[in-house]
Length: 115
Image 1: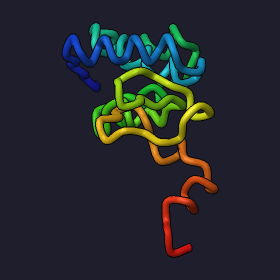
Image 2 (image 1 turned 120 degrees about the vertical axis):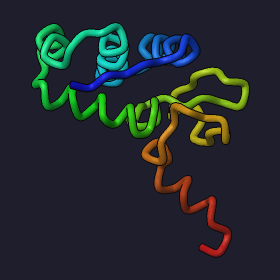
Image 3 (image 1 turned 90 degrees about the horizontal axis):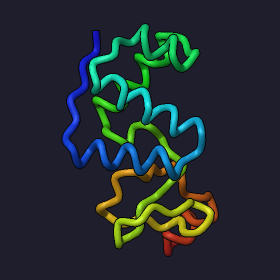
Image 4 (image 1 turned 180 degrees about the vertical axis):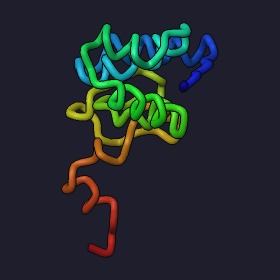
């Protein structure tokens, strides 16, 4: 059984992430929220019509890496506002919702002056 405890700030971050992200990413955040409310993996899987292994995998990723582990499609800018990667591929150091997967290959090439 996987237990997840989240702070009110983490809950707020997950809820904001749910509102602004793709349906797949929103569902991942919902898994975390439901688990934090005491629902078991099988209950979450039934409600979301997902395999319990899938739910377990996302819960484990969240436990290991936080919201960043959900491999989301949104970034947080320097002011803390969520933005889509199509708008801005540069994420701040405080960015807890952006992964390296959000950077285009052309952006990576520009970040290395020796290339």
